[in-house]
Image 1: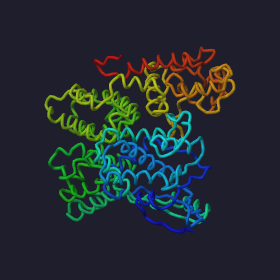
Image 2: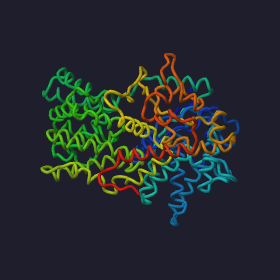
Image 3: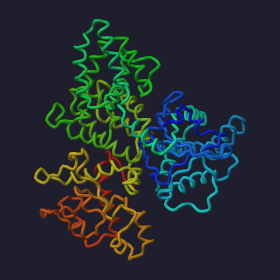
Image 4: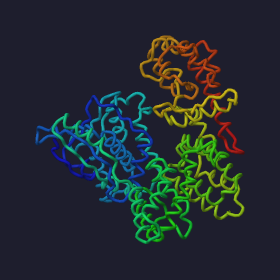
Length: 592
């Protein structure tokens, strides 16, 4: 079944001399990785040492000509290969206009060129993507933009395609980096490891793929640290394994899954590293890469102390990941729930410190939580500061709090975080609100819509927009009024463009993801691509309105409209932006 399975460096996968082309079958889906995956790959490589493991790919070797280019059909791994090649393209873009002329630089730049394109084969990329939705054409346009491909016409709507946004994301991350740092990242990419599995047939490939994806989870960092600490407690007669394990179960109960447990261990160290008893020399910040080494040191130093610390601090951390309206955090419930919904996990480092060291200062904690909600709405939409900088920012904030420990106020915290290098100003936030907000960040878009709606709810008239169904998914989801799908229904073509399909497509690209074209519904699938009138007046089989007459404030205007045009989207966008700015602006900010 398996022809070969070998570990290769990325420099060997994208070898400059070997004639191999990775072909993604035409039937496969287009490039779908988003910001979270781009960010994880970039940060994991940047933060790692040489030889970071990137996973595996499965290919079928379709080569028949020993002297020609060998085609490897990619059955699993196209998203990873595409993203790596886009990162290569961004680095090449960074280097191509550099005026250095030393031999090492020229060699590296030329090597990079031929990791993307075949040597002595003009207009032949190393990677041939699927053709779904012009995916391969868009990829070639990126290569053309950096001078590695000849393309007569730039594809339409390229800037709105996910593959181009990934390329731009890496450009932004590399833009301000000095040359030596860029070359360091390039070296880490080239030395990263990938398992390439070659099989004989499609049936073998899919059997293998299913097998790999149905195996149990590998031993995690939290498992290794648990085993180490329980062993040390027993070895040093601090606590029996049985008693220690019973205590450890309390930590597991407070932190519901492995990813949260691992994040807690990182953030615990980062929150309290300023204390001599916790600080480990040479490790100024805990990362996924060094986490086990840090805790080996802490456990060897004083296993009983660090064990008790983790159990105790996990109780506080539980307040952040499972806020309870009737529990010990009830006075902070709304704010902590908002932080959870907006995705403010990087701030938990600071909150862990705040709840431990300033537990009795309720005004300070409450004020900080309210500020952090606004901070992360803005940060997550503008993507500034970068995710990789947030640990450092919040560790710096803890240092600032320690300097002012006896006179700490919410204003000291807000003043620190609103320095220009640590937050986006109100006008940058407004620019993002005006743009294709849904396409930029669905989660933030949903949060903003929910908070606008909640501002107009009362105890008598309340809808829980955060309720989840049996499948754990949100019951209430974002609804595109002008339908999101690329195949625009005839009724909508007539309404928005007087029957002109080309014009309707142009307007669709320009307006469909704007804030004013979005609302909330518990029946998204029931509205689908219906006409505006049908969406507005839709009822369920009980006769209840499930369309735009469902009673939500967000739909109040829509319930009385006879049509929906781009002019109305523009007006509603302005109205919702004004409400969002008022909700999430900081004190003394002025909007231009």
